Amino acid sequence: MTPTDPLPLGQVYRDVQRLGADALVTAVGAYVLVGRPQVPQQDAWTYRTATGTGPPNVELTVAGLAMDMVCWLLRKKDGVRTFQDTLLLGRAPTNDLVVPDGSVSKLHARLHVEKDAVRLTDADSRNGTKLNGKRVDTKKGVTLKHQDVVGVGDVQMRYLDTRQLHALLRGVKF
Image (cartoon, rainbow, N blue to C red; front, side):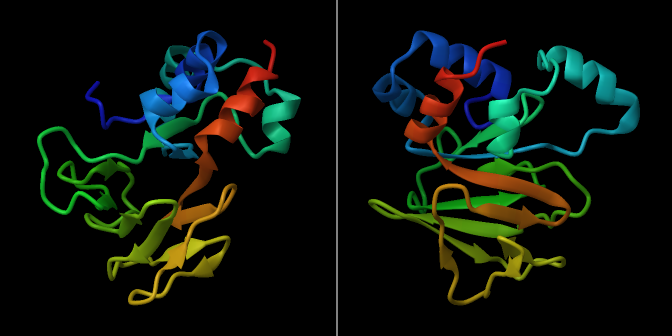
């Protein structure tokens, strides 16, 4: 796993149990995207076993999360020095955030990381990019807020403030 591969939410949960909020923000960044990758049916059991997925948890379900989800960290690939404030999201392995799903374009969207905000723009993708169910304009883009749902192809990801994710996971018991 490289530093830009998504982390299983179960691993983040284990980190939360041993780290404070500041240390978690240092480790994963101020914001993350959390979602469920599309896993081929024959690999689903192996995936659930490897990620430590257990029974559904009420606190996570209310927040729209589950332990079989993963966290995409909002950071550039190692060694990439160009366009430091822009993250590329798509299914191609050259993107900063790789979402391996056929409904996701090779380059699907861009995340523009500003001081206290992240802006999402569509990259003229085939299936479009959605925010909370509404299509994102290719030129204007939108500023993301905690708990926003970003749709790329058939994949739904929740944009979360890492401190609030820490507080939520800190209270979850398995």
